[in-house]
Length: 347
Image (cartoon, rainbow, N blue to C red):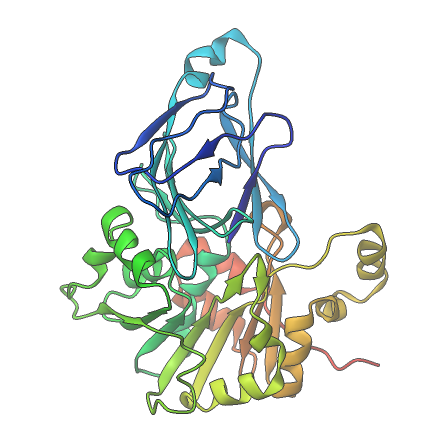
């Protein structure tokens, strides 16, 4: 997830509309779309409309803060006059759904934290330079079999995984049916539900993946876990019992790859991290600590660079041979794969 914000400009308030709304960069006044529903939902647009450039910055709990920044130079004036569009703003049982178009990207924002749960580039670029990319490396180190994504969102991870592994049988779990329909309309999710030439495809399951653990006999070669609410990892994922149930959904030698979010950024925590061995920096992430209890001696971790969100990721099972793994993934992922390390026992 990515959180969008502006620290300087007034926020714009929007209500659901059946038509896209165009927003000029130069516009700074409050303005509302006309709502045609009785359940009006107002969204504060979480970025500056007078700026033109997205930069990344770490954020506690989620992945990246994309802060819109601009230049005052005359040469950028034309770029600053480009427009953003709010394509849709609706309230479902589970989410406040906002889909925003920028000149280069399309973003799915959920809940009041403005977390971006999916990102789509319009120029054909597939890599997001964030944790979604990491998930595409998982199929290289698991046995043959279906792979699940718990927390499908708009399908960013699914797009990447099927692009790299077109024969993959993906099963994407998402609790919000309205969100799925919006992802089909605006993020090309329906294209993934069609069989590729290599035979792979995405099968969407609308439901609560965690509630189905005890009653559903389906097993997977790998499961991607990307479950957040309100900018935080779901509370159920802070319980060892949940992870043991998830472990039971894997076939032999199957693995989980988990987005464990970030940590509360503070001088005290940064000082603790700096004084720890690099191998033990994972102890600042509560989700990884719980995973270590559920998978003793069978857990690896990494923290993506601050420029890419500073998220913690976890991988169950023995640490793979990093040289072989790196050789099996696209060049874009090779260097990232080499950063995985085992969770070292604490002194």
